[in-house]
Length: 326
Length: 228
Image (cartoon, rainbow over all chains, first blue to last red; front, side, top):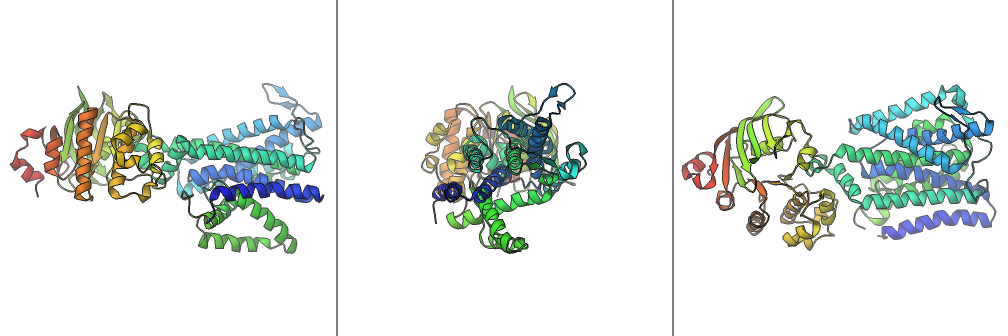
């Protein structure tokens, strides 16, 4: 068995080494692939807080991913077309500044997570899965019919947004931004899990009734976790939109919610680096197997089956042993 | 004024009624033994007090009516429950079990470890890997960490070896002596209860059939309702 902390460090070093190597041998597309993996990992780190530690199987995290994406899309759309955004109480010119876009993306997705969480957390189990899916689908169909922002065609953004001091169109610099965002989310996640709140959340997942008898409200614990989870996934959505310089309703689709869950299960539910390992594997398979056959999902499905049947705790569980022992 | 006042408490599990009117009061610093044979409603009474099942009647704790509160709010008022079957948070370590429950007050991790030395030796160990006796100690420690005004111990010695039981009784006696905390005890060992409890209430078929000072509990009464 490998110590989980060593594996975690190796994974992050690997994710950093690949684009640096690609930079040296001048293969910008590989850097873009690594950026995509980092962003998907960030989205899944967000989901893992709800799913892994809160036990909340959200099948609707695409809602937050899409809200993050559309926050970026709408703000950049108004800035690039010089059409002011009239909010009724104030008129806003839009912005191409990444920090402002991220702030809006995080706040908007956190607010959405709060409202969705307030309603969804009245249910549990399969009903929770279905109600979160339903919310995400509502956003999906709303985006399709939102003609002002491209409807089904989405919003193309011609130039990547700005970050002070960096040229974001240089792939390695944009990768750097995404990688740092991922590191911050992982740090936050690690701190959260070790905090009294994290311990209480962990306990609430295991025995909700018992948590109540020590004076903690399990619903509130889960709601806070769900909001944090949604906010991180929303940030990932804003970065993803910037990576592609394009926003479309597919960011809200249930396929995406499903993929995020798959990433976590592959890597390891409730393991700090589970989402990262899952995302790296997913992007690698998508690229190499996808180059060989358009039916690469069959192979992914077989691997997922193998992991679910033979590797409880995902690949990290397979390599490092069960949760909580390392 | 009494700390806990239970009056005409009735509760049902679905269609079947389990409690038909339980009455007793417990004063600050008092140790009360809730007695009765299996299936008479002792644990149900505790669940109703802690708001884990719906009930009717009066449950007044520290001057507040508990009936409108969700169970976590009742717990925050100072009800510390050590549940039947222990039920520690299995995947958390001993220290994490304590920290997760912590509320401000005189009982801190350090004090709990000094009071329950067995826990202090095993702070990093996962709760699932503890022996039954150690898990019971952890459940008591976890309840103390909430800094309760009333500690409720539901069958705290059940299924444990005689030596461990003796240790738990000694712990309860020490708690009474040192902290002056009010304690509600459910147990089947009448002899040990008699040594530590100030008063008793006996439940039979979901009703209180006797209550009073422990010293006044005659052999006849205890034979009739509790005896084996």
